[in-house]
Image 1 (cartoon, rainbow, N blue to C red):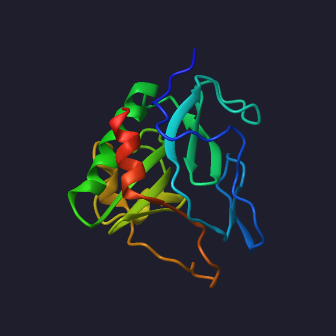
Image 2 (spheres, rainbow, N blue to C red):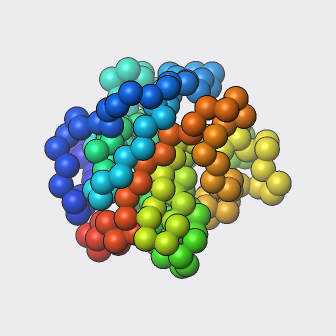
Length: 191
């Protein structure tokens, strides 16, 4: 069975961001490395959805699903652990987190990509959202729970998002993708 949040702006499956840029990887024990490409997408499409109630083929976890985010010409599938949240809880969190960016012209939020019980976990995978006027800038990140000043609140994941950086501690550009606040609003209209 496939659960999806409606995709308001069409994008053909498999389209990805391409272009020359520097690459770096982020590795976390037990998970495949995430490759970061320092390109920037600037087109309007936006969606986040559950595309399968099974994990990606490359991962053999028993309790997982596959999500996909589309931002402009960038599309990426991601693993969603289902040991703590159900598919419906991910979808609810995504709607709530997207609505937060409309509380002001400069507002930060995040889409949780994969979460396990924060009481016993070390990290949470997410897609931080940074609204700056009419733009929404999206990055891929990991929230390291032991680095938070206060405990992680799964009902308000945006409260644990760090301020936007464009360069990492090694001087590499941080990959980010842009869409418009209006594209996100159109997507939310279908949810």
